[in-house]
Length: 214
Length: 182
Image (cartoon, rainbow over all chains, first blue to last red; front, side):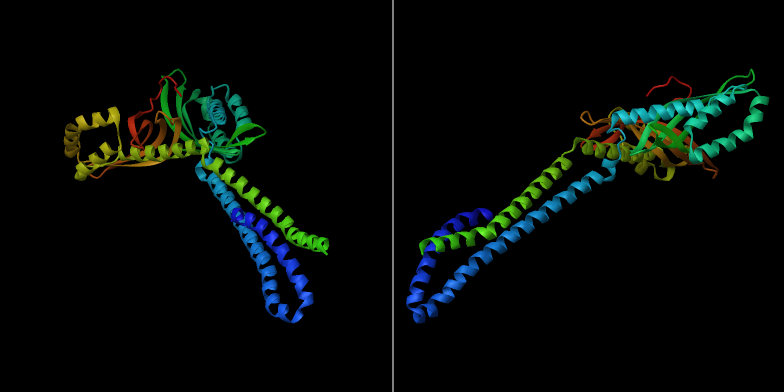
């Protein structure tokens, strides 16, 4: 729109100056004749041009602003799409970090010897929080004495860790665990466990806030 | 007489245009910037990768569920679905073992239904069209005498993109007590 209007404006100025000179000169000399035919034409020539141009310019500006807003909205939609917000695998560094941290944390918290549940519980205090910490405390209060009496050894290993969701300071992971347990001098038995773990990044450390057995 | 008129007309033409031009420039600038912003968002590699990841996971979970679901009364449909969900070597294995397997299930009269508890993509090579998934699954088997048994299993699947769709090219249980990997 603006392209077609700019050259016309340049031309209109030349014509306008000529017309104005013309209109003002004879208008003073012959008021009766010229005001009758000249004034309406003059008035419309003066007002329609700028008014139309102004309207077109305003329309173009509005269209541009609206278009810009449309683009911004579309860009926002794309960025805030659920798949784009989830950084699992797209941010490889953060993904492998949370997977490694959580795998190690689970291994430490669920590994103990008959004499040393203290180490596991100490680890639990640093890596567990919220509901997970409460669940763990309840579980240990119940089994602590039995563990010592039956001389149970448990060692846990994260076999596979997958990050389901990683968004901001929250992550959800699926972890496959192997748990090797032994009573006294008996044979070791291996059990498989599948957990969904919710973790939160706090002071640059991933802490487990919820554990669900699958 | 000439000069004031010219000045008058010149200023009359200029005054509305200075703000209008500025406004047009600002509006144009905004539109250009917004358009460029949208373009970069629309052509973001990460976003495209994230979409592939989610597609692979959805297809992987569905395929794993399909391959653990089978009704002896509706064998053909079930096994067709198995073949439709797979590609490559796994697809060939299922195809060649189909008759024997169908016979066994027909005799055992079992109905298996699977439910995906959770799944995650662990690897995704967008260009090669390959992905690996972990799936935690609960399979319910109803035997001919009506007894039901639930079994939780953890599966490792490999997906290959064929004709724009992700299909399972390998599937197995995650070994228990084996060497750690990935």
